[in-house]
Each structure stands twice: as C-alpha cells, then as structure tokens.
Amino acid sequence: MAGVARRVALVTGAGSPGGIGFAIARSLVAGGARVAVTATSARIHDRGRELGCFSDTADLTDPAETARLIDRVTEGLGPIDILVNNAGMVQTGKAVEDRILHELTDADWAHHMALNLTTAFHACRAVLPGMAARGHGRIVNIASVTGPVVTFAGASAYATAKAGMTGLTRSIALEYGAHGVTCNAVLPGWIASESQTEAEAQAGLATPLGRSGTPEEVAACALFLASDAASYVTGAMLVVDGGNVLQDMKG
Image (cartoon, rainbow, N blue to C red; front, side, top):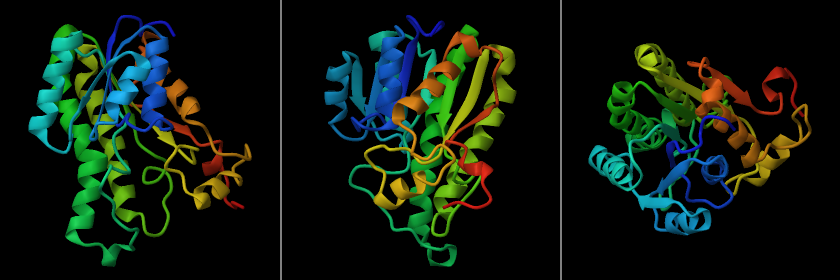
C-alpha cells in the first residue's frame, strides 16, 4: 500500500493475536511502516516480537500514561505519523455485564466511556499537535456499527461510546484538515476475532455474505485510510459488516 512505508505508526489495543489491532499492525509492518503496538498487559511484548516492532504497555484511560507512551514511541521510532485507535470493547482483567439502561450503574457507564471513547480522546490529543505542526497525519478510529448505525438491547453504554467515537472522528477531520491531518473511522460488524461469542458467530451467518468478517478484512480498510492513497478521504465512516445493515430482516 503506497504511503505507509517508513511512516511511524502506533496501533492501540493490539494485544490479542487473533484480534483486529494485531491484524492492523501486521498489515502496516508488511507495508513498510515503522510500527509500535500497545495494550494494557505484558502479552503485547509477544506481539511485538512476532512482528519485530516496538511494543509497550499503557493504560490509555490515564492521560499521564498516554503521554508517556507517546514520548517513548517518539524516542524509539520518531514522531508518530499514523495513529490507529483500536483499544476498546474489552480490557484484560476488566469486564461488565450487558444491562438495559436503567440497570446500568455509574461504574458501568464510566467503564464503557473510558474504555471505548476516552482512550481514543487521550491518544488523539497527544499526537495531534505534532501532526499539525509537521503538516501530515493519519488517524483511524476503530468504532463499530453498534452505536453509529445499529444497536441491541443491553449495549446502550457501549453503543453510546462508539457513536461518540464517530463524533470525535468528524470533529478532528474538520478542525485539523487544513493542517494535513485526516481522521476516519472504520465500523466493523460481526468479526471472527478471538473475542467473538458463539451467538455473534451465528449472527454473522445471517449477513448477506453469509459469514462473519475477518480481522484481516478490517485491517485492509484501516491500512487504506492510513495511507497516502486516502489523502482526500477524511471524516468518513467506513462500514465493514458484510452488508448486514442493509437488511430489515436478519436471520
């Protein structure tokens, strides 16, 4: 893919070997980018060794840890040209149950906002001044069809956070476009990652394409948006769901 070679890229939430974040990092490495990967647990160093790239742990819900991560990546690889915000949905050692809205606790709500939206905010805020000053930057936010396009019972907090991520995407695209920075979002549907449940796998069979997507198929879209080939694409929401949102009747 033209335009990622020698670029410095940071991919968050890349700790799972069968996840979207790791697939994106692998595609960037294959494209010649200088890649850093991060997650909250030490398994990220296994991913770094597999890819031969920079790895570090960080809790991106903490602005101080986020700033330290950006500093370490910059010291190790150089200024960040590409940021892929994939962290979200689940975090090692932390989980909450699905609940309808009035059953959500303040802690449940705060958990989803912190994990799925605040992480992206902290990372974007940390890299944007440098990108704007250099006149180039690519930010790719991995959101979801859940929230911006569809939702399901018990997912109100997660859906709200992911919808917020698309609002963040549009705002950055508008505010930083004149500085050579683009910001786009990828909205996956049912994806056969390590975290996919059996119920989600069954739902994937009811898409127009008759299957769940793969992390590599999401990665291909993220790679395009991170590249110079997408230099005139900004503020876009790219749905990657096998056409599932087209259906009134599913299954």
